[in-house]
Amino acid sequence: MKSIKDLLNELSFFEDLSDDMLEFIAGCGQNMHFSANEYVGKENDSADYLFVIRSGKIAVQLQHPVKGQLTIRTLHEGEIAGFSWIIPPYRLQFDLKALEHTSVVALNGTCVRKKCEEDHTLGYLLMKHSASVMNKRLTDTRIQLLDVYNQRV
Amino acid sequence: MYTTKEYKVKEEASEIESPWVPIPYKVTSKKMENRKLMTFAFEPARQKRIEPIKPGQFNMLYAFGVGEIPISVSSLFQTEHKLVHTIQDVGAVSHAINGLSINDNLGIRGPFGTCWPIENARGKDLIIMAGGVGLCPLRPVIETVMNKRDQFGDVNVLYGTRNPDGIIYHEDIIYWQSDPSVNLLITVDHAFSKWHGNVGVVTHLVNKAKFDPENTVAFVCGPEVMMRFGAYALLEHGISDENIFVSMERNMKCAIGFCGHCQYGPHFICKDGAVFNFNSIKPHLKIHEL
Image (cartoon, rainbow over all chains, first blue to last red; front, top):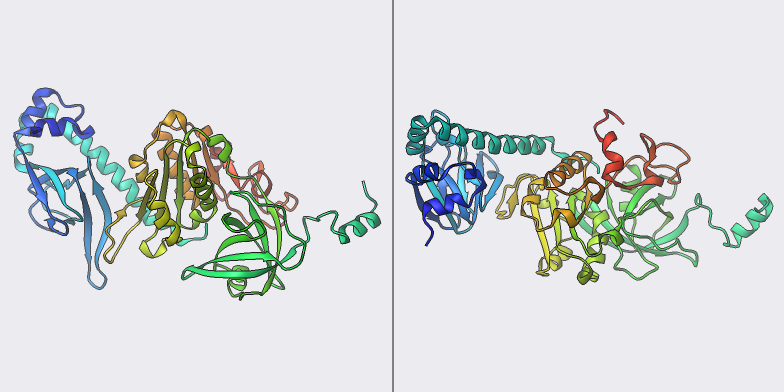
């Protein structure tokens, strides 16, 4: 059975981290499993974890008062769910819902933040990778906002 | 060369096809894909018919008394005399055509333009990226590839739409999904309802495609912004711009490079396209109002 460190080591998000850093971060991690349609977290809940998806699919959702749940993004194997653990006030901005049976490595946000404060190189690498993922998602969101399919091709 | 009189005599005798003269066709079937999109099969109303059309090429469809519009061929699976076009109801002509009933007539000129270079993709991995109704001109490519599946490497079909209601060609999609040798991935920009598929931009699907970037050909069709970002994503994954092909769309009138309505930089979309190599078109993609 793979250790948390082995699982993290397989992901590009952690690729620049040294062996010691991975060991350090893995100490904050635990395996979690969610059934289909189970909420991983809900909007405005305390953002206690950074979720690294090992298998399955998580929907990032927003509650629409009339139309119900609007899915704005799905996240898959190898992707990161939830960045609110790193940004005060550490509350989830959206609902996270497992669309199928989903396994994650959940890194405790408080623990990771504490380790980042202790080791600024580790903190910088994690922030750099988080910023890169957030930038890609922001770009994708901007393209979605263009609503390109609502025009003639 | 013929004199004008000889030309007229021969043209009347159908020995010379004038690219200006529509040939009468009639509607033989009509299928609603979604609220605004209709797929038609046409067959010659008389003996005369247009030359066989290839994937990526288009015909000018003439609604009598209303006008003409360029529409790409959307399937080659019918018998050789039949033409299949999928038409989005967005203007007077498309509205008139979508209102035609079985056995109603319309005029067709064509085929025009360049085709998807399927021959160049033989032996290579393939990425077919479609956005919205951009799937229509790519469906003949998918049909051709699936018909000769062993001649290609990994085949990836990446299809993005606005929402689940925008998905078209359901029967084909079910058929493509049933083939384990085709990696069909669908995403929508956003979804209410009980959609459990992917949500996000189509460019994101490139991460999940299976291909060797050194040996891959990509065909991209959809809204221009989507094609631009789609091509960027493919380039980012190591596919050479010479192996990326896009299908451009402009207001085509004559369809033979005379009128200039579809001029795009140094190109006429109707004659030099609509399918272009990305390398030749990319300098113009970001020019404002071109």
